[in-house]
Structure formats: structure tokens, C-alpha cells
Amino acid sequence: MYTAKQVAELIGKDDPEFQLRTVRYYTQIGLVPPLELVGNKRVYTDKHIDYFRAILTLSKSGETLAAIQTKLQSLSSEDIARIGESLHLYQSKQMIGNETFIISDDLIISVSPRISAELRANVIETVTRMIKEDGSR
Image (cartoon, rainbow, N blue to C red):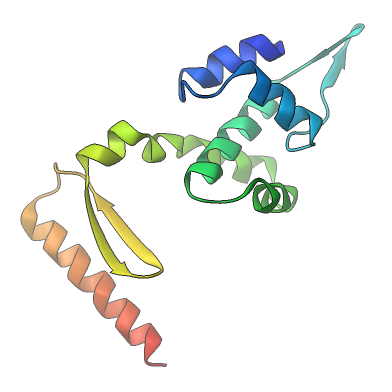
């Protein structure tokens, strides 16, 4: 069980820009499920934490809050948790260290420098070929 302040502190470890007012705003506009009632207090649960992480992940990928709300309504709890687990991929420290390759207007690949040059070239070549083949259908 978490208070709004605890949620802000916990998610703030993933994204320092995530503030208490963000927790309250997302709750107020219904981006996260209604709070759980424990005794006479309304509290956040691990399910809410999953939602907040998924919202952060989707917003960092360019989704609007309206699109995020629509998307989350159609997903299972497991899918929402899975989205939130990929938040680290959108952290600026992670992205800054990676090489970015624009394959098309719809596809960008971010590759860690730990990947060998040969593998990186093979991945880019394969994905580029697949996009071209799909576009020719």
C-alpha cells in the first residue's frame, strides 16, 4: 500500500521529473484505476505502480495522454506491467549511450555500443530489407 507521496518518490527514482502533482493529476483524470479502500483510507497498490510506469513509458515513446488512456483501457494487467518494465529503455542515459539508426519514417533502431559492429550491420541490413519487402506488397 502506498500514499501519493510514496508513489511519487518510488516512480521518481525512475524519472526525477515525476512529481507528487503528477500522481494526483493522473489519478484525477482517471489514467490510473480508482484507489483501493483499506480501512477508511484510499491507497495506491502495486497495480497502480504498474500503471504509472506504463504511462511514463508510453509518454516517453511519444504517446499523448488521451492515447495512453485509450490504450491502457484495452490491456490486461500483465500487459500494463510489461510495458512499465520497459521504462529503462526510454531513459535518456540509456538512449544517449546508444547509436540510433533511422530505417524509415516509422522505424528507428537504438543499438547499444556493446553490440559488435558485425551484428549491428546485420540487424540494420535485415530490418531494412524486411521493411522494403513489406512496402512492395
